[in-house]
Length: 167
Image (cartoon, rainbow, N blue to C red; front, side, top):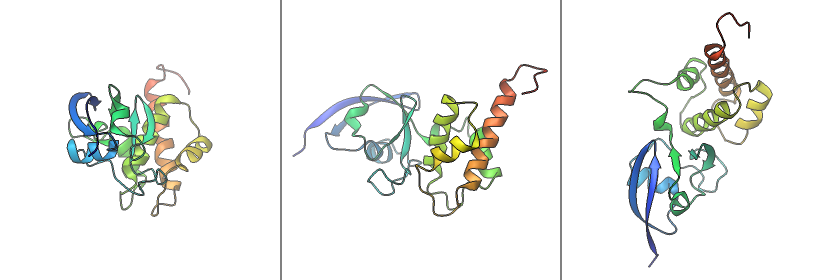
């Protein structure tokens, strides 16, 4: 019998107290205990990136993190992106640029991109390409994902630019 631990997780700004087995992964707790099924389970080896979530703002593979390791930390899943049922700018950009096809890998790419744009608002296409190469997609060929992230970054920069600026 596995040891069980009482942990507290803040997921998408909501605190949860959970009793979990020591070896239970974060992705399983998110999907099965909290019913946040937007985070997908792909390879379960940390290779594909479908389970990417943000842990204290940094992208992690939720299949490689034990839930007990996230004790007291902030977790963001793809469900945190939409506001009041409306897609956020990054999600809309993915749709506009056809940065999703079957959609299986999309939540992982969205969370990876959300972290990248938060850390580096001035990011360029070369760094976007390098970053998205860490996740696997069988449908898009990556170019549309790169275009979606680049367009969202440009729009966010334009929104934040002082009026009259020519950025």
